Each structure stands twice: as C-alpha cells, then as structure tokens.
Amino acid sequence: MLWAVLSGIALLIIIGLGFYAGKLLFLLKQQKARQEAARQSRITNITDSIIVIAKAMDQQQCDLSEGVIRIVNLLNALPINTPPDFKAQYPHIHALFTEVSGFAILEARQQLPKSERKKQDMAREQIESEYESKVLAELPPLQAYCETLMTAK
Image (cartoon, rainbow, N blue to C red; front, top):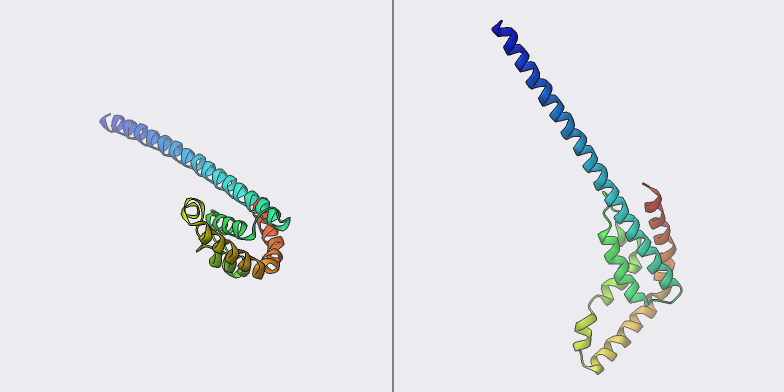
C-alpha cells in the first residue's frame, strides 16, 4: 500500500515536471521566434536605408563622402550571421570611407575656423572626384545585395 502511494506521488511529480518543462520549451520557442522577427526587421530597415542612400548618391542628391560614411556604418551594423567581406566586395566605397573619415564632422566641424573648414571641404571634394565613378559603379551591386537580404527571410 505504501509503495502504491509513493509511486502515485512520484508519478504526479514527474507529470508536473514534464508539463513545466514543456511549457518552458514552448516559451523558449516563442522567444526565439520574436528575436528572429526583430532581427529580420532590423535587416530590412538597414537595407532599406542603404538602398535609399545609394539612390540618393547615384542621383547626386547626397555627397559621396556622406553617403559612403553612412553606408559603411550601416553595413557594419547588419545583424547577419556570416557577413561577407564588405571591404573586398566594395573596395572603392571602403577606400573613400577610409580617406574621408578623418575629416571633422558635426560639432567638431563647427568648431573649426572658417579657413580650415574650407580647406577640408576642398580636400574632400578632391578625394570625392577621384573616387566618384568607381563608387557609383559599386552602388548597383550593393543595392542588389541589399534586396537579396530583404527577400531571404
């Protein structure tokens, strides 16, 4: 009789723990699904931004240096598991980024004397003119890559 009661209690404990484990697995699956949806949403937002910036650069509505800085930072922020080597894939975009990233921006730029700002602007324009055709040629493949990321859900 004692064995039957103990076996019944043990069975209830096992059933309870099994139910609890199943509930935790279900919650974990939901959490992973939410995280994946958020990751995919972030990828879509970033790639949309890259496409818009690339189009603006192509239509000369955005300075090349400004667009390149934004694009490189957005590419680095993409939450993809195995990102390609963007430096190798888009070498001229990265080369222009490297050359113009040393210039003062925002508040630091406002703190510069007017002559220094003009000097930096002229140097930046010279660098942009050297890279313009090469960077513009890399924009269509970049846009195509972004579109493949958006469709590969």
